[in-house]
Picture 1 (cartoon, one colour):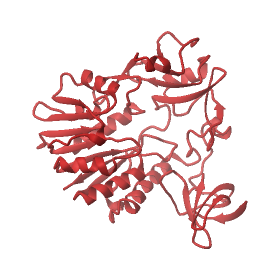
Picture 2 (cartoon, rainbow, N blue to C red; picture 1 turned 120 degrees about the vertical axis):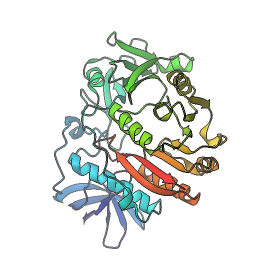
Picture 3 (spheres, one colour; picture 1 turned 180 degrees about the horizontal axis):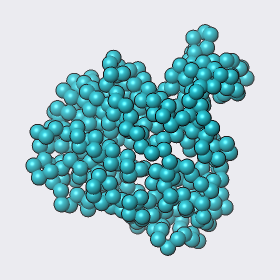
Picture 4 (cartoon, rainbow, N blue to C red; picture 1 turned 180 degrees about the vertical axis):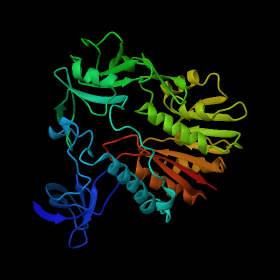
Length: 395
């Protein structure tokens, strides 16, 4: 293996630091911080691109800290940025957004359009985790591997979840998804493949993957954005309730008072539709997940909202003043952007959970005549390079 000394100058989507070697080749470095000098082992070398791992930090960044979670030293890969001070993490996540909008979105003034991140607490926030099981005990995956690392605590898990990680036995379970309503106290465990032999505290609702395949379901409730939400086992909801509050507030603020028709794509259980709907503003919520559609219809029964079940990629556009879109990490893509443009909406509010996808989607929307007005990062995922962004585009 080749070893070289490098000084990275920025981080990019995915969380790696970017440096250039003496020949100008891009080298992405796992675990490095911009500005520090590191000795790197190259493990994936091509003519114009390479990846490397740190062998030694020769001149550490002032932002380098000891990881606060003991399981990082044991190899847990769940929080790849625990070696960076929290305030510096926020700045780097904003840098990732600016870089993606500049490089992929072709936005020349991205630096001025991207706001400072909405800061949220760094610990005990996550209300959904997925864990491996080793002889009934929880484990997370080792960094850059599928191998398990046994854990008895989690820095970022909500206490309702961490108590199960610390004390519960998950016999005969290979994996589990643990979810909770942090403001309701309700807990749900989805066991893979089955709940057979599973013993958990009486308050925990359990369901197996075999039950879900048979058409059975289970649910829990959460309170966010000033109201209560029913969430089924296979329905998406934000992984922290204060993050849901922050996103809902930004989306609501971005909908003009004059807007009377709003389309909410990837509506989930109805968080944004329920937040922006009024007696004089109708919302058309579109969602493809059948369980989430049922939840949304339950949650929004008293609101001025029509909930449509449809594959977003094949959805037939309807006229709207505003379109809200909250896609998965893959982003919108050209087909959905075309449908959004066909609504003739004057404003698009894009809630993106991947910076690179955000950049690509903004470029597609720009090609349809929209221009980026603002982008606000929300710090949903401390100790990682992931960042949520609420972007507003107008035409």
